[in-house]
Image 1: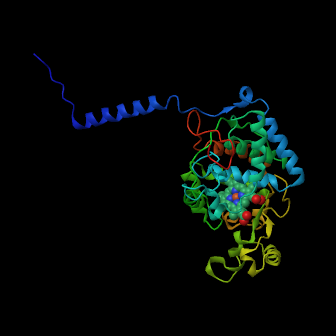
Image 2 (image 1 turned 90 degrees about the vertical axis):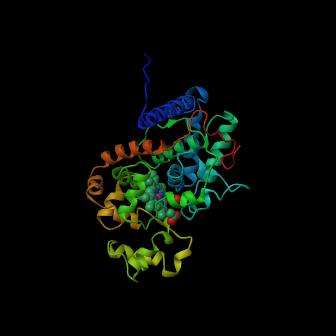
Length: 330
Ligand code: HEM
């Protein structure tokens, strides 16, 4: 007697899903690798040293450079992952790149990355990705500004897609509420605590008047000033950024007390109503108060969060490419 085994529709679907998952997993084996600490140790032993040396030398001439490099890495990772897509220039046949998005127009440090890439291409051609240059130079920038150090997992490859539209929807704006900021970070797979800890990067660097103009002259669609900003600070800022300064090139330090030092002054500033951006001041809560009095905790958490940030959607193995010029696809 023959026994017929009948699969119900549900069972058939489950088998189909399993089969698809297995095929996809099998296909991905050679494609997906994780980042490694010391990825270049055998491939290009001098790579990490070259990056830190060049960042060091250039920052002596331009002490604002560390802030620029740190922000570049963050903006790269938040748009389609850490794949140096932020560095791509416009090219015929491709959509406007990330660089063209409003939130990215104030990014700096592109020439520095070009210079590092040129040296690395001379020493180890086709080996070190632009995405890794961004991750390494962000760490070196923090160290140079007197902040903590961490081991940067490397092995990222460079992406071929770069979209201004994606940048516009992925990068949080300084006018976001606390809820919007939290949602944005969660969308990227990062927690609220990580958002608060990483915002401490605003202990260095500067912002254009336009980034906080609303707080001075147009708070909540009124003609008033944001009451969460210390009034004497607001008066000072109005002198540097008058009402006509909406489009001015003037920059103001994000941390008015120790603008070049990577310390936890950012959190102390929030306690005193000295946060420059609305997005800084709205995240002021219990955790920011704790971090303002525990710099060791902040530094440790910052390093961990930077490693997480640097892992977002990375391309490894056979995905992506090692660009020869960071501004152009090969
Ligand atoms: C929480 C959401 C964030 C918002 C809304 C935000 C927004 C901004 C804005 C508006 C500026 C000034 C741009 C200008 O006017 O030129 C700025 C500067 C900066 N941001 Fe953020 N940011 C955020 C998170 C971060 C994170 C996570 C990092 C790094 C891990 C970072 C690093 C920096 C640095 C270093 C600068 C100074 C750049 C320079 O001097 O050129 N920011 N940010």
